[in-house]
Image 1: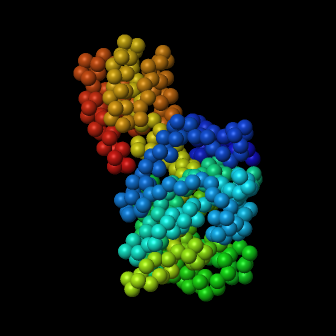
Image 2: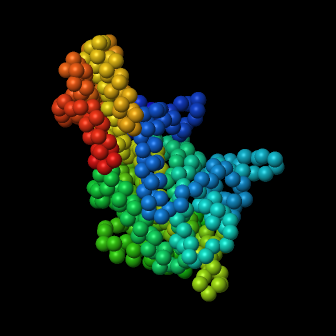
Image 3: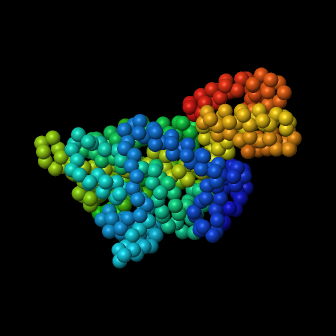
Length: 414
């Protein structure tokens, strides 16, 4: 099935993505490598700003690390060879082997190791919007849900104790549930929890440490039970370095994927010798939590396209308002209003084309634009605009009042 093949389901993100001009694929660029249009990029920007601001508010340190690293880094972490099948081939530069990174954790651990750390610095929440590269089989590629390059809202939390790690995992789940609430996603309806466990017998796939597996799986199971929500357990779905709590979502065609995840890691602290100086001056081994608050930007965009059926709330809409002039003589005034909205930070388009007003309104509704501002003789005279929403006409208001109204709705993400 080609990436651009249309589904029979009208909510399918591949179908709506093309209809709404959000993203495309090019065989010349390569399979699984999405190209976002200006409209699709606007949605991405809103999601990225939203999660970065929220994470910083919750005590995360946002960093930036390279998309490429020496192969030795992934040998050190164990991703190579454990994750080799999902990694791109090494790139030889000046007789050294480099890799496009499939994950961020080794980079963040090296950043942590830049200098000795005190227990006073922990928990240290290191976060990044990271571009990652993974080789997906051609048959597994599917729109934005399965791609070969994606941007992950990733973080690694370095903790001083198991108790602190458990507390941080709970806070990470609080953040995920907050994010889901902003999107209007309900547990048990749009998403579910899965406790993903290892397999002691599968030593090729998983790091060998039976006691650590037993202890960490018990820790995560207790965390989920203490939170009181429902969850399922799934064997052989863990990361190679430890068990995880996955937030599972289905697309409109019934295919389930992991949207967000919180992972316990008992492997990397040893491999990277992650330590901190305890109150008594001795070195202690740190504990590590991996988590993704909003998942891969590409995948969450796909889920949200389908969840909203392309009818995005105002804050996420690529075009938040369109200004329509009744006739050509009203075009200068319409242009002035569009500038006022743009200066106020509202994504606006001006449609002063030669088409009839009725046709232009129908086009805007097909494009699922939340608000239309229509201006004619009366509006020019009173410096007003007639505001029309998705449910119909709202009323005629001064332009300044419309700006405040839209800004408040955007700010509240309502």
